[in-house]
Image (cartoon, rainbow over all chains, first blue to last red; front, top):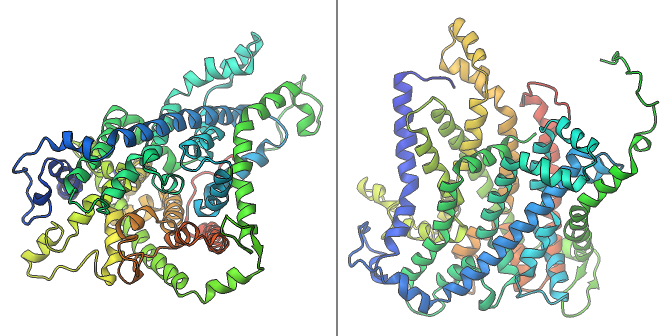
Amino acid sequence: MRKGSLMSKTFGLIIVGGGGLIMMLPFLWLISSSFKAANKIYVFPPQMIPDPFRWQNYVEVFTAVPVLTYAQNTLIVTVFATIGTVLSSILAGYSFARLRFKGRDVVFSLLIATLMLPYVVTMIPIYIMFSKIGWVNTLLPLIVPAFFGEAFYIFLLRQFFRTIPMELENAAQIDGASRLRILFQIMAPLARPAIVVVTILSVLDNWNAFMQPLIFLTKRNVWTLALGLNSLQRFETGRDWTHYMMVLGVFMVVPVVILYFIAQRELIEGIVMTGLKT
Amino acid sequence: MNTQTIPLNAPRKLPFYRRLSFEEAFWGWALIMPAVLGLLLFKVGPVIASLGLSFTSYDIISAPKWIGFQNYSQLVVDNYWLKSIQVTLWYSVLFIPLSLIIAYIIALLMSQDLKGISIYRTMWYLPSLVPAVASAVVWRWALNPEFGPVNYPLRVLGLDAPGWLTDPKWIIPSVVLIQLWALGTGALIFLAAIKGVPDTYYEAAEVDGANFWVKFWNITLPMTSSVIFFQLIISIIASFQVFGVAYILFSGQTTSDPAGPGNSALFYVLYTYRNAFGYFKNGYASAMAWVMFIVIMLLTLLLFRLQKAWVYYETAGDE
């Protein structure tokens, strides 16, 4: 709505601001608990300031849990899967937006239709396929499919490429530039905002992934942070490692929060784009 | 408008593909080739394979055995399957309206040019970026009946705190609560939609003396109905596929009830996952997946049919 009255604005501030603060509490508690002793986390009333303040949790966790291995695996998957998704989706997005060829619209509709397809339907045959070629318990099932495009990102990029004026491309074509040069030297720089959005969404998606790593990675040495954290909360070691769990939680959440603050504008734009479509 | 003038150098009317250059078609296909292969390898192929598997009994080690419709007929008498449908539906019935309505109200409140809006936007949006595992860790504490802060206000009021994550009645509401923590995404999408309504409509209504409710019902709501519709579809599809939070919080804590006390968190996808990767009943799990796929397709089609009755599109799109 347009500008509200003073009363409705005050009301808005109370709900939106107060609610926002409540939304922030779990974050604060997670960070605070990561500095607590294991037996000081589940106490009532909750401690907001850790006492004793155990910064050494952040050192000990590395010997208690193979954090570096988990982090390395998560990073490898996130970096390579994102590169693959972004590259392949740019190629397809451009082609669908700008080139005319027989069968284009059929393929595009089919691609869009797969957005409705639940992952459980394809999960089993894909698992069988990867297990037959010996890729289970490697990071490949999480990386290789990314190089074959992601329907949703292709759609977003196509929509953006369509808004770029034809003239620039035509001029380059008259000068004899090849399609690939046009795409990477003219179109891609112009589509930078959309490419940034797709990159961020893809990073988040891979960093936060749970179900696919769970299916394909059963050995600890290939686990991602999400799987490592999940196993900690099952008390597999029989010891109370709640404080290390909190540290691992911080390791998972902090990069995401930093990414948000670096690319806040693009991220929000991207979310809006994904919601408003067409 | 069919009366456009044809420029002198226009090509004669030929079929679509004949007018196109070979070079353009070559590059067109070349650039979509990765996506086409992906479509075949990771979508179309597996969908067909999954349908095939759903008529077999298959544990991956020995060859699949054709058993006809047996998996499907078994589903109907499988109490766990019925339970998983009940759990998923109860969750959807609670979560979908709550998340859409709260997100919309927050967006509506945010849309009135509040001071410091970017701070509030951040506060509401950040939780939706939190990975499911981390959010489960935090909420397991927050909902703890003895130590959790959620019960704090209840205690002050002298009410008994429910066993959020231990009492079968409260498990689905708890999962709903946890998932509502991430409703910021929806709120931002609604906010953009509400902000997108042209001011002139409101000005015209104000001239006629319209109050807040009149403007809301006659302008804001209809003008944002297409976005509401889209969000509705997305949240239905997402609600049917809840997995992570249920698996992380409830899976495998006890052997007799693998999905929370009394299997009260046996979400549909969780049960499918168990059949495939826990019991190696891949044929059965495929049948389950296909039933869900068909339901989602039918529901989406039905909603698209029904949308004409309530969704308002400003312009007939050019697509």
